[in-house]
Image 1: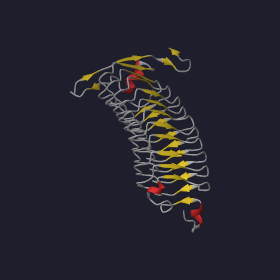
Image 2: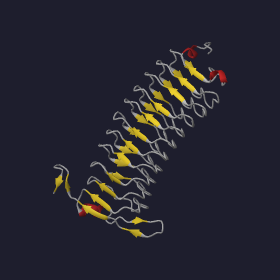
Image 3: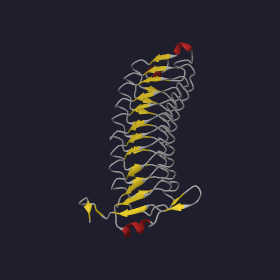
Image 4: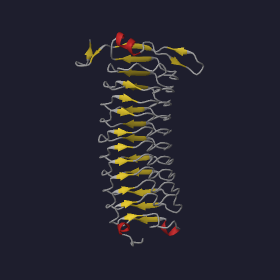
Length: 300
């Protein structure tokens, strides 16, 4: 590694480690604080990399397209993983982030098709859009309570994803966050949730039941379209915006909707919500208006 320029003492650049068989396994030395943008992009030789405790930033596309990269060992001290830093690395099977990481950038691990296990940082603050989209073999995700924002499409098209535990401090499930997650069965919702975005759960065809937290006020267009196994859903009294008439389009198994408010409040939200089938027939789930006293937690 050359050290002619001042910043090369602390920064790994694209010419620091040539794409050769000799650099198949790399141990980055202590003292390095940043891996620069595109530093290892589309490196055809790299299989394993070990990162030092001094490292603070992995910049955008630093390891993007490294087809043979299968092992990344992170160390405490890392704070940020940049946009598309490890995108399209199809050989990575597991990621364990140190608890010093506070931000994961847009598309950071997008299309890591072999990724099966993921451990997120306990000090994580935000996850960027498409960060884990198209991670076809990812099965379980726990978003720590430190996290307040998971941006749109963060886990879209994770076809094997079965269960998700979301941070209790998230107020938004953004647009298309879980769109296309056809194996998703269990979602532990944030207790502070206020809004579910457009297409948030579209195509989650294994989801059978869902209880929305009491503070949810808004459900976006097409939020549950194509949830063909959804049998029952509980909607809170806090809903203040009329429901999209097609919010449950393609939910052919939906038979029961429990609503925390009164019949009059349900009528204000749109009244009878029909479920349109692929053959254009429509059925109307049974709606039970519970008229819950939110302060006392009991029926009024």
